[in-house]
Every structure is written in structure tokens, then in C-alpha cells.
Length: 333
Ligand SMILES: CC(C)(COP(=O)(O)OP(=O)(O)OC[C@H]1O[C@@H](n2cnc3c(N)ncnc32)[C@H](O)[C@@H]1OP(=O)(O)O)[C@@H](O)C(=O)NCCC(=O)NCCS
View (cartoon, rainbow, N blue to C red):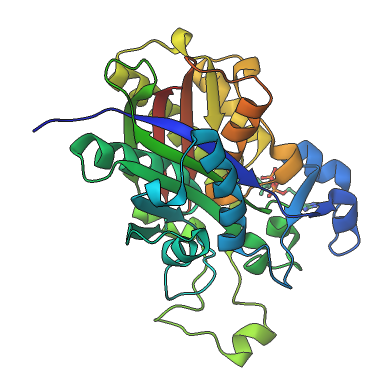
């Protein structure tokens, strides 16, 4: 069977217009700008309008339009959409199908939603690479888009300070023969035994949301921060190393690491365990907080736009999330 290489053709992002600073949060929960910044690295986050226009597929539409321009492609060139989100517009139909219509795609492309929380983009990138390799797809739109403000308990200072809304996308396509730019290696894994560390148990088939849940604020996400912190640093470091091993490349060859942006202390600890200097690590958590599946593609897109990441650079994506899910991908951009 003939196989192909895959590469990132273009990227885009969307951040909601409304910015909520730590000082704004001081007014709604018992916290301080200093505590949030010192413990998480976050200064502000963007929050979607509830009036419309900034729901997950709206943000994805805006981000994809830019990615299409960057890739010099038309919507109908996309033959597979992977939409990673834990906050889809609606339960049915899936967000990828909704986005297909918004983009005006008329080629009946395959539409897949994936629910792997903050690892969503890295899962999507690895899936896209595999599908392009085998010829199942030629041009895959990978989306990470979240409106976490809908599932955060704004009365819980342990969680509400951490998250934000936003979207990042990448169009992954077939690399020309002999191209230096390509996805070099990927790794995906999960440990379901840690599911209780970060969950949203109310609102599914087992326990549909009732008025009593709403009265007691039980319908929101729940997190054991310390447990997540420990697992995150270990998993990010292990997957980062394994991914490089799979590609047969040393850490010293890496130009940039794009870690999931959950907490600056997680990022710094991981960099320390891996043994990579922080000036090679892309950090934008101060501006967006944790936008789950959107952090990696937003960080990548911004770094490309700022001229930090250039074609030919070796870039390591590394993420973890609820599930617990995790994964890494090494690309030559
Ligand atoms: C959540 C997190 C920031 C908490 O930081 P921490 O240093 O572990 O803080 P602790 O939970 O030990 O809390 C320390 C104290 O600060 C308090 N505190 C918690 N949130 C606070 C806030 N927003 N403002 C002020 N004080 C706060 C706690 O109540 C606690 O007080 P106590 O000592 O009187 O009980 C950190 O554990 C974290 O980032 N974990 C990972 C979360 C994550 O990555 N989630 C997403 C995964 S994809």
C-alpha cells in the first residue's frame, strides 16, 4: 500500500472579545490577582458571549477561515473534520457536522467529534496523520474549540480561576514527496482509573440534570487540582521523551515545545524534568488560561504569527487532560 506523509498546511485561532482579568474575579470569588498569578501564571482569560456568535462552532468557523487562507485552500478541499471539544454546541448533531455546514462544505466530508478534553488537539493531530498516511483522508481540519465558561462553577474559586474560552485549528494535509515538513512521530495514551480527578458527572445518561442539581450547583465540572498536577507533570515528561525516542531524535534537536497550558508551574516542572530550557517552551497561559483542547493550537498559531516558530523547526506538542488522556506529537514544521 502506498503511504503518504502529513504536514501542517495552515493554522488559525479565535479568542472571544470579552476579557476577564484576575481582578474581575476578585469581585465574584474569594481570591486575589496575586494568588492566581503566582499559583497558575494566569492573568486573564477570554469568555464567550452567551448571546451567540462565539459558541464553539462559531469560533471554529472564524479560526478555520484564517487557516484556509494560510493554507491557500478552499472549504471543499477539506475531506475530514475532527472536532475536539468537551463543550460542544449541542449534544446532537456533532460539532464537526455543524461546522461543515457553516463552512459551506458540500463534498459530504467525514465529520468526527472527539472527547478527550485537553488532549484533544494532540489526539486530532495524530489521528489526522494516520489517516493521511493511509490515504483515508487527504486534507484534515483539526479543531480544538471550547466554551468552558458554560461548565465552570463561577462560585468555586478552586476551578473558575483556571479556565477560559477559545479555539485553535490546524489544517493537516499531504506533504509533497521528499518534503522536510512532516509529522515525525506521535504517541497517545490514557489512564481511565484517574477519571475522578477531573469530571462532570451530572448531565449524562446515568444522572440527567435535575432542578435539585442546579439548585446545589452540582452540574458543573469537578476537579482534584493536586492530583491532576502530579499526573500532569509525570505524563507530559514521559510522553515527551517517548515521542522523541520514537522519532530517534535527541531533546537537543527540539526547537520548540508546545505544552498544554494548564498551569505555569506544571509547564516549568515538566520542562525541568525533560531538561529543556524555558526559552524553548511556548507559554501564553497568562492571556488565555486553560482553554482545554484549544491551548496547543492557539499557542502554535500565535508562535507562528509572531515569527518564533518557522518552517523547518522541530516542534513537540505535549498534552494531558481529563480521562485521564494524554499524548504528544513531534513535527517538522
Ligand atoms: C488548582 C491549583 C492551581 C491549586 O494550586 P495549589 O498550589 O495546589 O493550591 P492548593 O489546592 O494547595 O490550595 C492552597 C490554598 O489556597 C486556597 N485556594 C484555592 N484556590 C484559591 C483561589 N482561587 N484564591 C485564593 N486561594 C485559593 C485553598 O483553599 C488552600 O487554602 P488552605 O491551605 O487554607 O486550605 C493547582 O493544584 C493546579 O493547577 N492543579 C492542576 C489543575 C489542572 O491542570 N487542571 C486541568 C487539567 S487539564
